[in-house]
Amino acid sequence: MPNLQAHLRVPGPTPLPDAVRAAGAWQMVNHRGPEFAALMGRVLPALQRAFRTSNDLVLVGASGTGGLEAAVVNHLSPGDPVLAVTIGAFGDRFAKIARQYGADVTTLPVDWGRAAEPGAVAEAIVRMRAEGRSPVAVLMTHNETSTGVTNPIAVLAAAVRSAAPDALVVVDAISGLGAVPFDTDGWGLDVVVTGSQKSWMVPPGLTMLAVSPRAWAAQERATMPRFYFDLRAHRDAATKGSTPWTPPVSVCFQLDVALGLMEAEGYDSIFARHAACGAATRAGLAALGFRLLADPEHASNTVTAAYVPEGLDWKSFNAELRRRGLALAGGQGRLTGIVFRVGHLGYVTLDDILAALDILEEALADAGRPVDRGSSLAAAARAGSEAARGRVPDATDPVVPSPLDAGRTRA
Image (cartoon, rainbow, N blue to C red; front, top):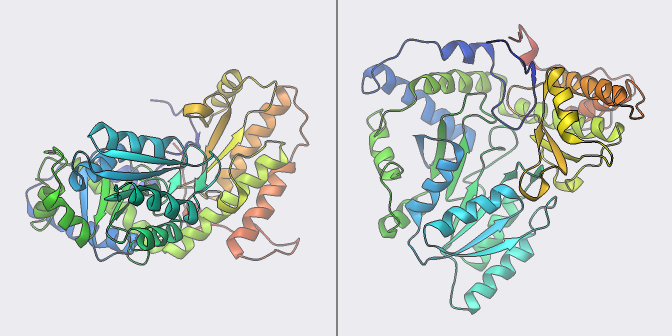
């Protein structure tokens, strides 16, 4: 089919490197055979390195939401007190899943566009304990895709540990892990969930979870129903190089290839590339007059949300962008029609961001909005170079290239 989205800039699914696309066309293998066992022997240790953990890693054939459901049903019982720290639509979803299975959920809502504060988390736990409802688990979102905010998980987890040492720290890291610094063991996290279609440069179909010894112990006590999502079955099968149920074999091939590409690039370089793309996106949008939603101190390097200007009809403007080959995402939940979102995660370089901004500039000008042509690209290039270097650049600094640009093609 023709590619009508040559510039796919949504927060997932993300574009795929050519080698990852090719791996999806490989012939099937027996998922109970030695070839698949060898693949698992490569993928699981590579994921441990990416998660920065010695905890068990499990692969489950599901979306990221399936991973969140698995995190809930494997570690909780109906009636368990739970604190859900929510900074947007996906934090609300995590809380909803726990509530749907009968957990006694207390929600700590944070203004959309802001990150959670450790003091507020600790205070919420103290209030729950005073009510005789000390939380069994605290649910948090690492990177809130609906608002473009990255939570300071390290300090939030420390606040949880201080206020409720026995509570499990369960983190939705679906849209940030693999693109920005993350330290599962260093931050004392018990369950971490991510999804293949985000930073990992792989199609949808896999959710990956890291599970700590404390969390495995909690599973022995938990009584929420589970069958397909029983993580013990996945752990036991992984020791034999398999999965308990039929996995999405092609997506597993692609994850294997993508992890190889990521390790070849190096995670420090990946983090710098995403920092450059995030800074460039924010600077470029601001130069075009868009007001950004996220608190600058916690702005995400994987997705940026900006307000739709007054007098600009998002539906028709978005249709025009799509006609020009640029796919952006609209707002979610209470932000529907109020903001739009630009994804810059996974297989993305500074050149991709500049191309998207060029289309935005052109479409805005054609819509009769005041635009200084080229201004957003200049601002984005400078901000991207500054972020990639971690310093204020000289005016003559060149734009930093990415290793992903070599031999790059678009279909």
